[in-house]
Image (cartoon, rainbow, N blue to C red; front, side, top):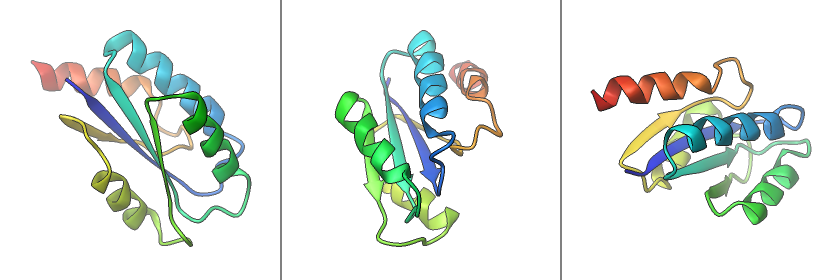
Length: 111
């Protein structure tokens, strides 16, 4: 089963690498088949540059670049349009919700 994670991003240069590392750790330990769909919502900092590097280095990473800031909901919608998974999880890049909750949600869903 492929799990898609949609991560909308806006000016997240300070946290995006750590968020990515935590997501990969949690998902690799729980389910080896996953994709991370990052949506850069017109960031004005180095978020896009960092996302390009993540995409280049990781086959599980897709990145959608919006031409300007359309807002959180449009970024989520754009991400959903580019998922391939059997299940989709939405999580923000700012780590306010710890990636470990994904494991708990999916465990409950699999029951």
